[in-house]
Image 1 (spheres, rainbow, N blue to C red):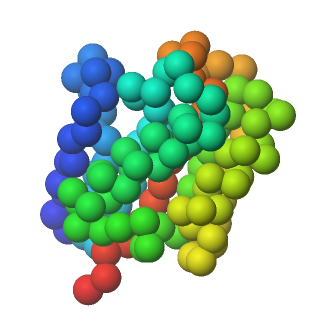
Image 2: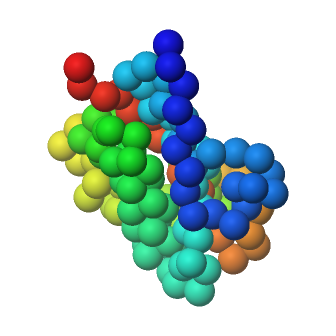
Length: 124
């Protein structure tokens, strides 16, 4: 199988040594994606930003949000679950991927309230 790293725009990629996504065969694994550039907005807008960045990574890998089969959401505030879930539902309400939502103590940037991972496939 051929591996292809998909870069993003995060300033942390070269420092930490990761890719926004990695494509292996017809699978795409998107790294934990924080709301880069949306630090000062509410959690709904931060969630939109994360999912927009994920959508771009998927497109660059040859896939799309319609082919996501798994998401993982990391929240810093349990009370944000409903707002995050609403935005997630706008993106994935028709496909309904397997999803996990976990509350964590902190994320890399203290202003971030959400980080999201996604896995998708590429139709043959």
